[in-house]
Amino acid sequence: MNYVEEAVQLFEDGYVCSQAVLGVFCEEFGLSREQAFKISMSFGGGMRKGEVCGACTGAIMALGLRYGENKSKSDEMCVKFLDSFEKENGSYICRDLLDCDIRTEEGIKYAIDNNLFKEICPKMVESAVKIAQELIL
Image 1 (cartoon, rainbow, N blue to C red):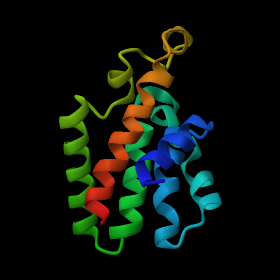
Image 2 (cartoon, rainbow, N blue to C red; image 1 turned 60 degrees about the vertical axis):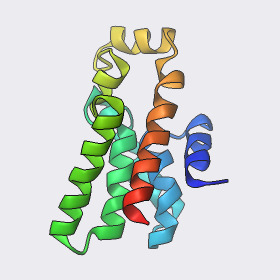
Image 3 (spheres, helix red, strand yellow; image 1 turned 90 degrees about the vertical axis):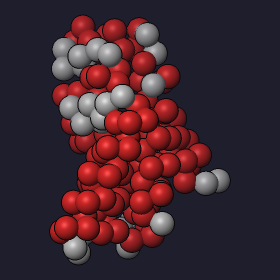
Image 4 (cartoon, rainbow, N blue to C red; image 1 turned 90 degrees about the horizontal axis):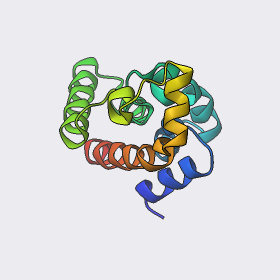
């Protein structure tokens, strides 16, 4: 199974988007999957506020593991990642990607009723892993 397939499977198995993305890269950089899952838990759903997509934050954490010893390189890779993700998906803001505001109960209900978490989020996980993989390897 490749990184993309593994991340989508993790997401489908119940891990949040940020966990699924960081989880496929973490061990390569000396962070256990258990630690990665704990660190990235609260970043799903745009930090539960529909902000920066959790798949993006998981990828940015992975980029930090790869480039974090060099601030300018880390900053460069973060910007490249976000620019690429936005170009591919139209935004890197969760509520824009879902086209609803998950900060509200109504927004969460809308997302659930319309299967947005099951239809859109796996695509965002896939996109984030593909772009991060290009920047990491």
